[in-house]
Amino acid sequence: MTSNNISTSGHTYTTLTGKISSLVLTPRTPLLWFVGAGIGFLGTMLLFTAVAWLLLRGVGIWGVNIPIAWGLAIVNFVWWIGIGHAGTLISAILFLMRQPWRQSINRFAEAMTLFAVTCAGLYPLLHLGRPWFFYWLAPYPNTMGLWPQWRSPLVWDVFAVSTYLTISFVFWFIGMIPDLATMRDRATHRYVRMIYGIFAMGWRGSARHWHHYETTYLLLAGLATPLVVSVHTVVSFDFAIAILPGWHSTIFPPYFVAGAIYSGLAMVLTLAIPLRRLYRLEELVTMRHIENMSKLMLATGVIVAYSYLVETFTAWYSGNAYESFVTVNRAMGPYSWLYWLLVATNIVLPQALWSSRVRSNVFVVFGIALSVNLGMWLERFVIVVTSLHRDFLPSSWGMYVPTRWDWATFVGTLGLFTLLFFIFIRLLPMISMSEMKQMLQKREARAE
Image (cartoon, rainbow, N blue to C red; front, side, top):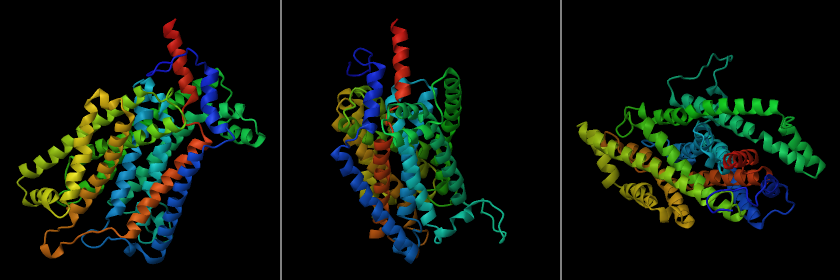
């Protein structure tokens, strides 16, 4: 077994299938799994508590007020949506580009997408004021003659996020059908075999099944690819269509897309590095995968840094005093320490990835990935708060300080994401067995 690639010597299809399926079918669950799932469960309970109190008291429990009317809710919404982009990038785009190294990480990256988008979708609903009327956002005939306001970005978000979640789920599930059939055939308990059999949808691995599967998977990859661009472009319109200094900018759509992929790749590395150590997957999730992911993260990080420079240059070159004020206020105002921490975590630290020695050190890469996750959250905070907290009139200026319920909701969504992810790796194969075996077959054919 080589350090950077999976070879067939000593690693037959049977042992490959056995190694991955045994992580799920084993009767003994690792102690660290209970620790991680327990932390996620506590966070989820905190989320339920925060949401229950919100429904009782209203959004006034958050720190939002005039002039900052969204605050941490939109910050976390955009951050979670961004994290959900890496799964589609790795699965769909790299699949269309025929990049075989994606096959060890695409499954849990897709799952990460689903859970991140689920967490993101909570925030617009909770911020509606009366979230129990969320269905008013859907265009359906009703007795009051009430229709959605199609000029509202909130309605755009509902359609963009729901479409992205639907396509991502179908793409993830279709790709897992051959593996679900494998789990069905290898399960020893009757009811476990029955459950996997239901979701395997009668898969028998015939040539006809494989033909339909590959055609469907290719079409879904083609459908999912434009969503990487469209979804976060629509999210960026929440800001770009506002006639507000710091937001009203045509660079926001590509800027937000690059930032979303950047944060998503960082989250994939944040999950992949501990997983390969916990489940001893070093032979499947190799250093080649870590290095390739690091290179992609570095490339998108450079695009994000360029966007920062263009945004600053545009504010100066436009000659607009209000745009210039927002830029200077970010760098020298009361929130300047957050801005410079954002620059350090998003731009400065990731430049270390130019070094191959850094990319081959999993601990350093893990630290950089964590810093990028923090930096991208700070970026959304800076964009939202510093553009709003000082209005055109000094009499309208104000400071925004998140309350404990803001933080409880955010920490709760982190817990929900963690719990869902740990349930996923316990019940379903986190690495695609069928795609790994196809890769080994192609490698054998080339060797002959």
